[in-house]
Length: 166
Image (cartoon, rainbow, N blue to C red):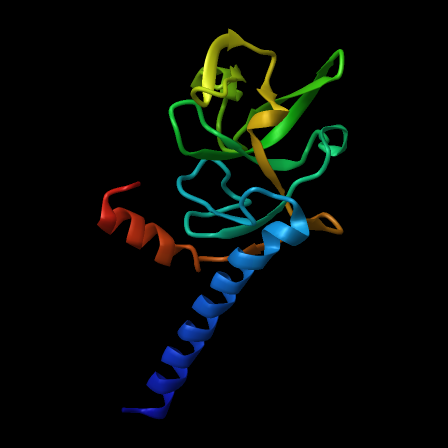
């Protein structure tokens, strides 16, 4: 086997191991339910492309701001990664209006602004935005740069597509 092929396989193996280790330990460090998310779809173009991996952390509800990119639990199952365009506080509860950067409308058109329910992900109670209880995490940003690992998430997308859980 060529030396370049061996180095390529070693590089891929190391990348996979780094992702596994990050996945195991970062929830304890970041407080996020899931330490990273794999982007699927085009709603966040040009910031994120399909297959990008985004690192997440979970701040308190009052620290999520307009402009932050959040991952939240989708009504009906799965997750959505979109930008916060408005924060609504009612009493001590926080709600976040969200929108994909590449979408012409906010997520209310996606029927996502509903209360969290312990029995199922969303109840029938409409809200002014995504309630904090459905927020999984906020994308890590450093000096205005949203941290992402380009294309490495394609491995995950391939496996979920093969297994039919996508």
